[in-house]
Length: 379
Image (cartoon, rainbow, N blue to C red):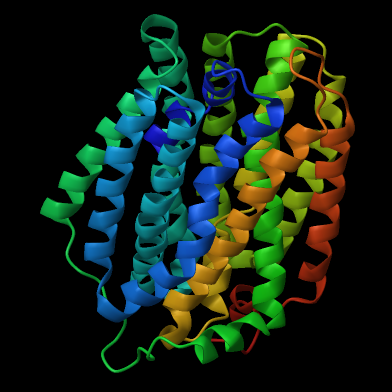
């Protein structure tokens, strides 16, 4: 995740350096997720069936190689292709690793365990933007991708040397089939949680990683180095709140925290274009980071409502639905942001805020097993 966040301050500018439109800049971000949408579900199913370690290793190797190629790209198509392969590697690694943690965590403290897991992701996210901004200013816009590849290579050797294989309980894994996937697709509780996940990704990838760098550059005159520091502060706020919220969701349930996070994010996204100086811009982004953290580990809610034998497929579906937001939001929001070189209009912020509110509504009627465990008479 340090590698992923290292490139966030520079990716829009790197894309623009090839002389492309804002929509194609958004495509660079979405391309990463296109491959993940296609491979998240197979990765979850195959990891549960055949062992998660080997898919984690394959994913990290793919990320390392493709990121190095992105750093030396000589054309927009080459950079776009590298981003697709980065997405393939991410699907293989992230889906299988989050399934492994969900499998190992006791249900009564699943939120705390997954929060710790995600907090390690957020440590990388916190430091990455500042490192990426520094590296790009001193070594060029392609340099952060080289660092991304080095991070992935280091992760490969950590998994190879320190991680044992993780499989579902013996005899509890179903054969890979479309019937299993179809059964999960018609579950209202999973659908509602996945829609909320889409909303989080609309904010994270559509607003923070796409529109925010453009708004900072064209409206506020903030360079990549300063933007990297601001995004780091936002990520630190996310990290702190995530650790706190994870344990609280085990005690009080997942629903109030996730719904509250989406409502707060909707308000903050609409407020963001009203900031006209770096200080207020930073304050709003820090509040957005805290709001995302308040949602807690959404994956814990998925695991709460899923049978153990369906966990791999459910996590793959969960990752896929989130990545749909990853794919759709950057291109669609960048397309309505305005023309290259012009100020960013309010339209992408309003659209994103409305989406956050609408996608939170199904959670009202969603079952919350974590809250049920704390009621009188519950185990």
